[in-house]
Amino acid sequence: MPTLHHHYNKNLKLLARELRKNGTKGEALLWKKALKARNIEGYQFNRQFPIDEYIVDFLCRKLYLIIEIDGSSHISKGAYDRHRQEYLENLGYTIIRFSEDQVIYRMDDVISEIVTMIKSKEGNE
Image 1 (cartoon, helix red, strand yellow):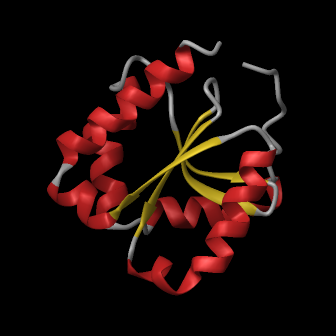
Image 2 (cartoon, one colour):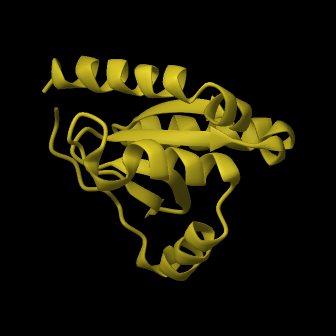
């Protein structure tokens, strides 16, 4: 795994804090049931983390792994999301996306996919 700088944007700190307070149901569930307190494979995740001009839903800094939860607002943001994903991938991040419904109704499958991604990234360290 290359050593990269996470491009933390302190100018987005207040917005990120506000997004943490007002997250979606899916974000809250994934955080509480899986990502908080290093519940998945012992890795620490941050919520609503600012990277350059973007705020990602969840970030595991050690693995350069971003988890995004796409709600209904993402349907109209296709081009924006593609550009954002390409930009973040060019910085060295891996991004996995889940729909809000996947997180709410198929949490076990979501967690399994996250664990699979973590294990594949561990093999590349």
